[in-house]
Length: 321
Image (cartoon, rainbow, N blue to C red; front, side, top):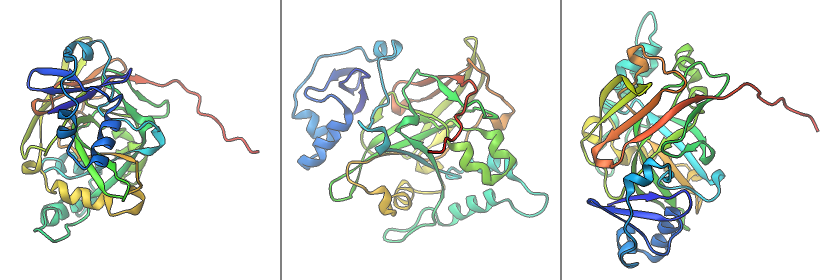
């Protein structure tokens, strides 16, 4: 089952090739909230509503009608976060950005920690991963809309990832709604200057969807990330995800995010990205304004596309009251 959300309000459920509106819900957030309160799964909640009107999901995507698959009605209560160095193919790209003249880089040390302790036995706590913050729902960009690189940025590059969506229940329990593909847009030139600039490099928009996969994440995910310039592909590379290709379990990454009380506040929505192994930047590609990023993985339905844009100058000065 896959869910999508319309910008103008409304939830779409796709099962196989058939996509229908879900009666009675203006947003996926409301659907998830209702499911939690009723103590039933999202699938059961949808089934209880009966069949809605059939829609052409591909046409809705092509005409820019689809939003991120889940949004919070108050952007300040939607948190975008992620973990890095979680995939077995991610170490070489990151290590090349942070290598030292002697010894092992901190990136490689963190990666090896994940290999050794990121998949704990049942009942055990695994090693904590690298963690980063991307902002609130203000930075959540709908499919098809531009990923805007700020005027002070040194680079704007894609990171194809899987994102998990979580709604916090009234008692502080995180409920996983499902997974989508994501473009965790970052500034890799800034990050390369010094690893301690990682936090700055991640404060950028990100895009999700268009569809939310309801249910467990497949153990093996195959996808393709590409960049188009003037309608022609200038870079393309496959990427792998899912626990078979990761140094951490999803459960371990979830534990180390939600162990903080801050992230278990009732009603909050969390979108957590699980890392990547593929970057065009690692292959020497510099994306330009107008380029289009495309991330596709069959398990997640429609591809995620976003053009690159750059913001004009004009950062506001601080004013003393």
